[in-house]
Image (tube, rainbow, N blue to C red; front, side):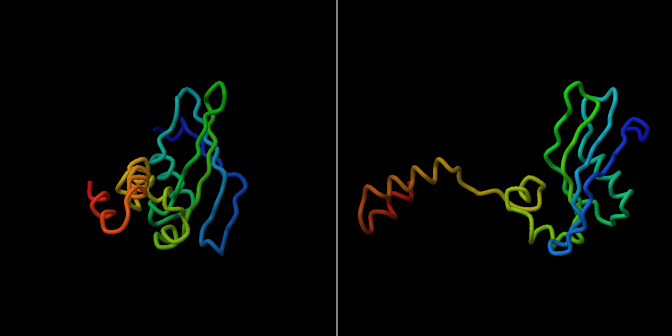
Length: 130
């Protein structure tokens, strides 16, 4: 990404002391480009707001405007990684590579639960082992 090709604007910038973060709507203007990678945007925002650790910046929900050339999404800059891990939902942490995904699939868990309903007592452990 070249610096002249992409312009980043932050709107509705709020400093949220309770959640130890700055939150904003991020508008990207990128004429001639289909989209901009979030890692490039992260680096540029880190420079703009003098953030030491770019992994504290979380960007999501980007949509390209009709006709292209402009994208809008949401961003948050946490004061520290521990604050991000404390306040962010688990699914979003997993998406950003800070948490771990659930091991078994939802359908498998439901099927196991329903198999266990059909038996009583000690046999439940035998059914769940399958």
